Image (tube, rainbow, N blue to C red; front, side, top):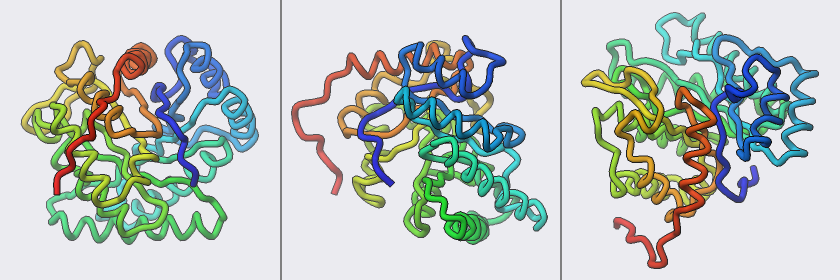
Length: 290
């Protein structure tokens, strides 16, 4: 799958300025706002028909808008109920198939919960279930990035290390790096330039430059506590150091999609895009940890 070739910015879902309109109109509005990416949100169900997906693909391609998909939140590949695992696999597969028809480049999802079990046990369960989803997509001839997301609570499967390991072991899998979730999951860490750089260094070390040239990123403000994520906030209402995060993305020459999940959606997406445009890449080489 070809790298997007640059870093695109856009909202998680249809912009508020086009609220209530179809996804195709959301794509058009994204372009009108001066953004160039949008995440199609299948929050509770896969709501896009095949016919509508074809129209979305045409609009996005003609306007140069990069699309991603967020699969439904009712996914738990590590459920103790096998029927729920089967339905979770089905939701990932269906999201990928309809997302591909809509021209989406990447599909993300929250993988599951520990539910009192060891991380190693849950990892194996999720890996095996995800492998089944990938096999179904391969049989259907669908090639699209499948992305487990870093999650905001320690009770959820989805540390940086876990999502990277899945990407090492499975074909066509890369992580969605949600920097707000990393910040909340660690109760305030991952908030300096050095910490952001360490995330990108870790990805490059274990997955190569291909991963840095094909990143699917979520950014928002976030409220958190000892148990991790509480709620998303607008960037200026939070302590997320988004300016240094943008510097790190620029310095590491990251390409792909930055999807804004702040409550104000397009406003913070524009803030991130404008900050990126104003940020100059360092002239000196960035020191890499050995």
